[in-house]
Length: 392
Image (cartoon, rainbow, N blue to C red):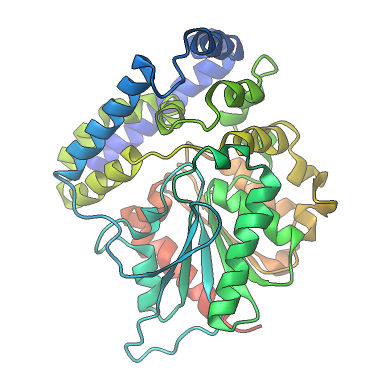
């Protein structure tokens, strides 16, 4: 019954999104967004002291407290934490020996800036980092923390060079390894890919999970973000950092049926109830998105498609997908409604078959990381990949 409901949600969400693409008035167009931003600016509603902003934050905190009261504890795997830049931290999950040989090279996981790091350490029994550490791998996770006012000025190059670059250096320094495996998820996969194109030497292999490559094919997000009537810089001017409630609301617009009917699934699928509840904690635990980085990301990837076209330049250095010369494992969710599977699979068109491997699974975006199918397909695939590329 739960699988039937998931398929029903997926199909209805797909129907809704097709309507918004064909008839923009069904959803929010760039014109609507601009008028809303004008209202936010005129009234000061984006300011922390305004009743509207207070109400949004209060609602989010109440939702988080409510779901935490019934969900299993999240992010419970022990780790060592090292400060990086600003609010960012590097989390180290030491390998568990158990008679296994420790992997020669560490893996660094790069998550999206939109959500917390612990989607990879959701709860006991559903933790990718615990699984990989149990297989003898040295695992590091880049924790973006909670951006503040200073981080609102971060540009794309600050994130790539100043944070991811610093994290790679820290991993190599702490482990004494010559190279690192990079595992990127969603937006984090785009950043990991870009970093690898810019700095191929320290990257042994690249693992991508639900990651767009050709942004022209990444509908429906591109349909909205590339609307000429919408100026992402206006969002930055109004908000500074995009508040977590705003980012969450944007993604609810992509999957309206799933979000409104998910309580049914939670009580039908009793075997996965803990996973559903822990995921709700993670979704409710929203963080601000650095404003200028958001505008740069939308402009660079969704509008210019610069990485795909080979026109992306960071600090005078060109980054193109064709420059990737390390082995690449691309894991694609065929039911992914956040990242269009066609956009993710397009990566294979740019790379040599000798260094590219693709794994397609009938999973959605979140399920790629923590779903039931991830335990039997995605996680073992990553483990085997790391083991087979353990040495320089």
